[in-house]
Image (cartoon, helix red, strand yellow):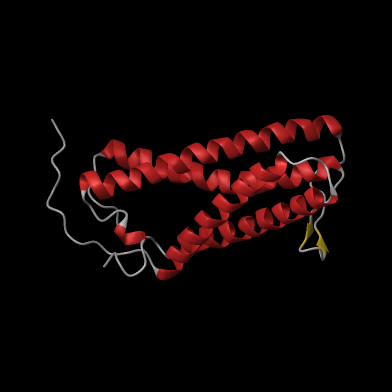
Length: 186
C-alpha cells in the first residue's frame, strides 16, 4: 500500500536554544572543516602551527558545544515528528545519530592525534589539556587517517542532511525546515 500524506498542519518549532545550538554547530563545523582543509595544504611555518592551534581550539569548543546541545536535547524534547513514511523516519533517526557520533568522534580523534604527535592541545593558549594517548608516531599516522575519514564522512552526511531539508521544503512543502529557522516556524 502506498503512503498517503495526511493534510499538513503547522507544527511546533524547535526551541530558540535548540535553534542556536543547531546553527552555531553548523557554522562552526563548516568553518573549522574549511579552515582545517586550508591549513593542511600550507607549507610548514610558524603561521601554520598557529593555525593548527586555532583549529584545535575550535574543535574543543565544538566538542563542548555538542555536549551542551546533546544535554539540551535529552532534557528538552524536540517537537513531534511531522507525518512521514516509516522508512524516512528511520533514515532521519539514523542520520541524526551518525551526525552526533561524528560531532563527538572528530574532535576526540583530533585531540588523540595531537597527543600522539607530541603536540598537546593548549586551549586558547592558556590551558593544556591532558594527553589522551602517549606520543606514538605510528598511532599518530593512523589517527590522522581516521580524523580525515571521519571529516569526510561528516561532510557527506551534512550534504545529505541539507538535501533532505531542502527536499522537505521545496518538494514535500512541509514545515521540517521552517521549524528550525528562527521566527519562521510557528
